[in-house]
Amino acid sequence: MRKYELMYIIRPETEQEAVQALVEKFNGIIANGGEVSKSDVLGKRRLAYEINKIRDGIYVLVHFTGTTEVVNELDRVIKITDDVIRFLIVKDAA
Image (cartoon, rainbow, N blue to C red; front, side, top):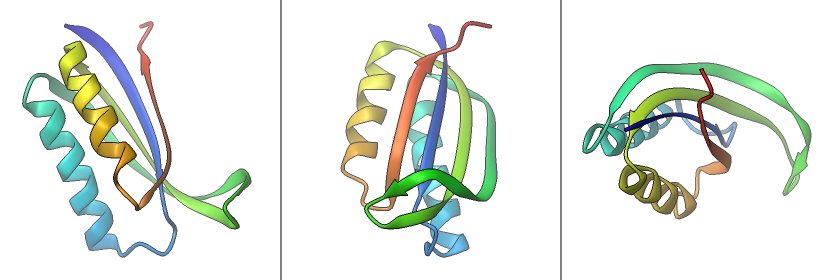
């Protein structure tokens, strides 16, 4: 199992309960074949550039360990989630 870092940006108009539900959903997917070591909702911040006329977003950062199957499933589910504007999964160097 490898260490990974996941950062995703949720639409700014999303309700707080929906944000929490999304975080729990993604952490549950990771827990099926890995382990979440740290999950932080960083809050609403200004984007560096507009994405589809959206200027702000709710940032979430997750550190986890898992297999490639977990990463592939997480990638698939996040891509079809409408509330997520952008995301990135990288191998953690540390």
